[in-house]
Image 1 (cartoon, rainbow, N blue to C red):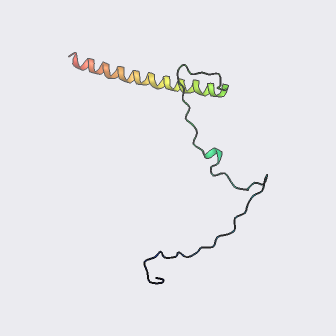
Image 2 (image 1 turned 60 degrees about the horizontal axis):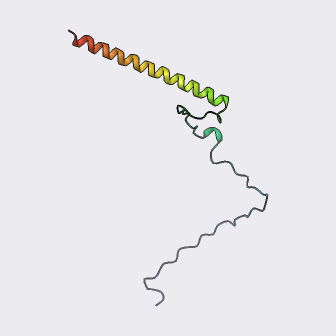
Image 3 (image 1 turned 180 degrees about the vertical axis):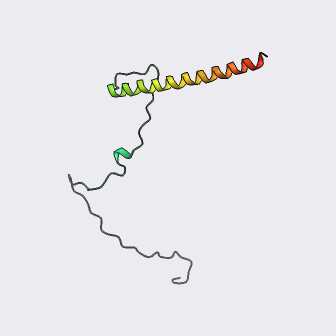
Length: 94
């Protein structure tokens, strides 16, 4: 049953360039997929009570700044909530 049967159709063969094999100590000259500066930076986070022995002075300073920013944010939210509470108290005391 050759020819007109329901067998598999042959796909055309595509020729590819020969692959180069690299010997020991020989490296390819390729660019990295992502440049170091283009990589997303890991978000700095700090856990209260975290072991600090492995952190550098720079990392500790960054964490202090992060915590100061967070304190400022928390204080602003407290002030906003106190203002809302005072306005509500004034409205309902009439």
